[in-house]
Length: 360
Ligand code: ATP
Image (tube, rainbow, N blue to C red; front, side):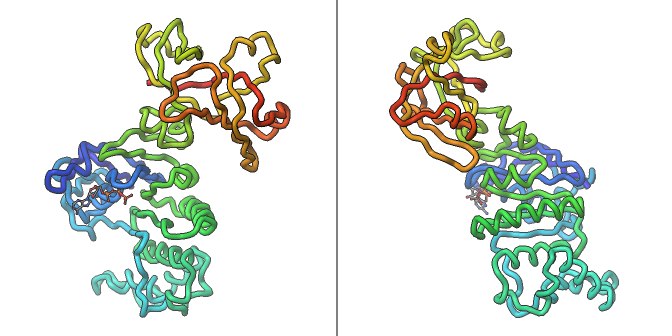
């Protein structure tokens, strides 16, 4: 049950909301559409669902061209952030709704409907709430019922638009875990929209990063984090230190800093201006006197130390000149163990070594 978006462009008046989108979602995949507000995530979901039609391009479902097909032919189930359950219906009736609305010849018997609804309520682990009304449920329970309702029609595709957006942090976390388990059980090809990178990382098997109506990168959470394809992805996913400089002898020179670039370097012309991106956990801290090499490394002063549970975050003010973009402080993250081993205090001088740099 694959989904293919082929060269999709969607305009609203003079505004291009989707600009030449190409995407392949494999059968059984669980995909996150991730990006800042207004980048086109919901529009792409609506085009796949058949709630909007593209100006150019095609939507293929399981290989079949469905670009202009009616929404009901596409067999999609939906859950939206504010998709209110029917207030005057019990949980049971809400979940049964999709089955009861089917044309008469396709409608299951009353007994089959009962069986199916109870099965779904067991699946979302809320069988005990069947006779309640939506007003008597918590936010997290409502979203699980909304999901059960979407699944009732046995959709071939599940489209979720910020399904947990309105809930508080602890409930969201629980529901994310739960959605992943549910997907492992059912294997319905699923696409969910989020602007929360942590949510995308935690739930999705692959992430589609969007920006300004275009796809910046498609990859597993690890690929997106460890090998960001564009500057946008580097800064949008996770914390990052951004340095401006140029290349010389396989190094990034930025101010007085020299940072080794690794094996890809030869493809960049000597002297070319580049921007380097270094993740906080890709910087090692050393005491300047620790080794002869440490003495030659860029130095900084410990400005702030923040315990984060399993890790420690350090803010380091560079002592040797360096061209940092947007900030005057470097962020460094160490494991608890490394931090304990170094035993640094605010105001002390450290030497810094960048372990991995992405550059464009
Ligand atoms: P958010 O995370 O804020 O929901 P999004 O990435 O889902 O954002 P979309 O809802 O897809 O973004 O909207 C993309 C752009 O298209 C926005 O600038 C929005 O204002 C515009 N847009 C969406 N629907 C319409 C419409 N029906 N008419 C005009 N402009 C629209």
